[in-house]
Length: 314
Image: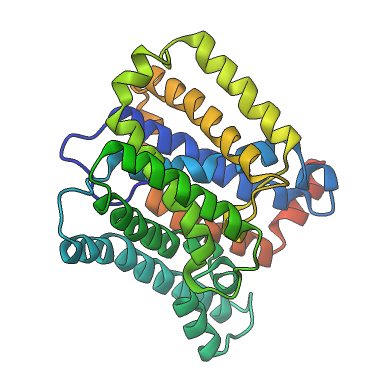
């Protein structure tokens, strides 16, 4: 999801790509909670499949639309503080006020102020779960953007960019096997996110090559890629970027992501005129930051249990 450096002329298919991704993400987060105790839904094919690529779509789009050459480091850092950390702080305060409202309504109990401060500063999924777990993405994106900037700044040639991308990906694979939960701001995940951001940047540099030589605009290539993405996901396992987990095999995960990217880029270009998907893409930050509050409210008022009984949800 790209929240920063939005060009004056928006790229329609990128907005649509983010629109698809945010729909997949919200569906993946909200639906399984309606089937508590239903192991089939918790580990269903469709939920696991969406998890295999919806977060990578956001990081890829961020890399495609970022202009890393525009700023010196100080300017780049300040732009990310304004466009990533400021929204993170604002959404965290909104989440805290929302929790305070639920406490006032008698829906939830109290929170230790030190726990609230620690969650804000630590800014990973485990800590932010007390208020709004989805916000882990923003600090992770901030670190990933900084890492990507530094990598690209030391790359004087395209061949160097490709080499450093591969090395960064290998580092991400290594860190995924370590216990990185003690690191703040989802640092372990940010390495893998930076790899995907640079992947998006590389695609931008070589988009014409991929279209003309790889034939990414051809339906048969897109559907082969879709099949490969599905197959590799099934061989591997349901990943979870917030926990820096990528299934049984990191290489299979990354290949599955690349295959899925080919298909969903193709699909986004085909339906780039969709105003609904474009709207969701343009407003993906708000949707991403607030949908978890709906989930929290529904869980605390037992909405899912009541709805399941009334509609025979299972």
